[in-house]
Length: 177
Image 1: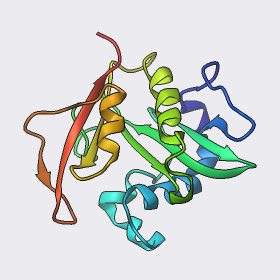
Image 2: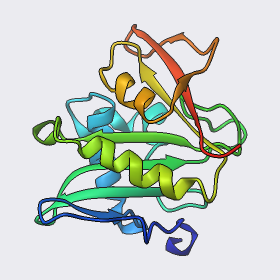
Image 3: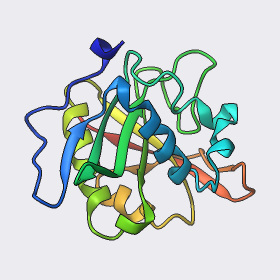
Image 4: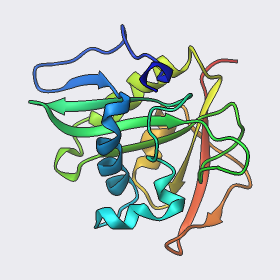
């Protein structure tokens, strides 16, 4: 299964404070932890709901790609892509050939540029494999500004009432034309 992961290699540069490494199939437990943070859930059980679990279940399948940020071997955050096919689609699905982004930085590490660095690393690598990347975001999420800075644009007509009763919408970043 690990051989199906897309490599993240030469672009990853680290500092003494923060190491960036590709996600592997062995990182599925980390994906679950980060999914809990990304989904704003307070318990690990909450992300076991099928609509959320699909972002982590079986991590390492074809089309999965990601990067993690570590400090002294402790995870600070992760960003990952997952392709969706058929009826198994994520909230940010726009097309079978466009993977959806999920990203989380643990609260104690937010505001330090880690999310920006994770996105830079992942988008740089993704452009070799994909023409675009999509995501779904809550309208009141401050990360919308980060996504816009990184080249994401709102997908017209994608606004929905999300599972918490708020407004969410899809964004897309074209990596190559």
